Image (cartoon, rainbow, N blue to C red; front, side, top):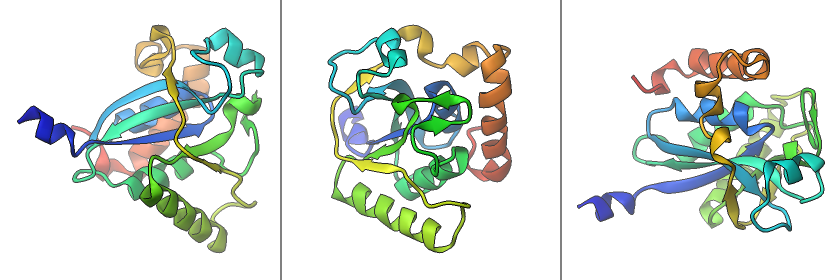
Length: 184
């Protein structure tokens, strides 16, 4: 029975700046089964956080979201992704600067690619942002989970200065705007 349930779980891989800020945004949503912080899109196998911070691996900090599409759709995840970060700044989110902080969607199949393309086109046409979206659309490539201390970092360190100043407002923004989608 469990195997048939797992067949309905899908993956979404999104990069939108520091994973300390992205992970808690998605972890709070109904239908999201897990969120893993990690690295994707570079040329180094099994990179470390130290290597990522140097900016020479080509990887982005990202989250791998496992979700039940009968409870939350991929389009909804994309909408929240675009609301929760600035998709108009290449290689930057606030004071975090470097290719590891780029905005990217690592689509897992053609349906996810088409959904991402449609959403970006709609957001640009509606001029939702003051500048065009620069989010990269990337094919599936290996995802490397980050070190254990990065997993659920915000939940484990809510008073850490970066979390309090940067992650907490993003989490609060999503809680307010998407209250109907939050886990109990």
